[in-house]
Length: 95
Image 1: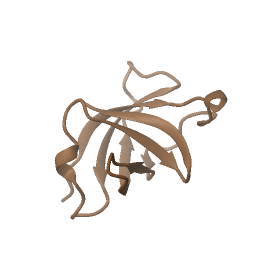
Image 2: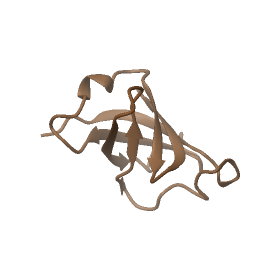
Image 3: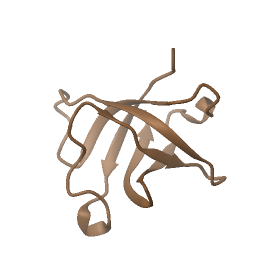
């Protein structure tokens, strides 16, 4: 079983080169880039029932898709840039 951590995603607006709106649905599989340049795929499950959410912010659970991924980096307060291909679309903060 993969480790899932709670996180918040702040979506980058279309005007800033990001998304027009957050992804639709409850699951999302983007990539993040680490400080050392490594890229990893993520599994994100959105909690779209949370009343604290707004259009450009999502509460979620996040985990890596691979067992050998650097799970130790998913610690409280850690920030990661979310990519769709070469485009930065959001900033994820681990809770």
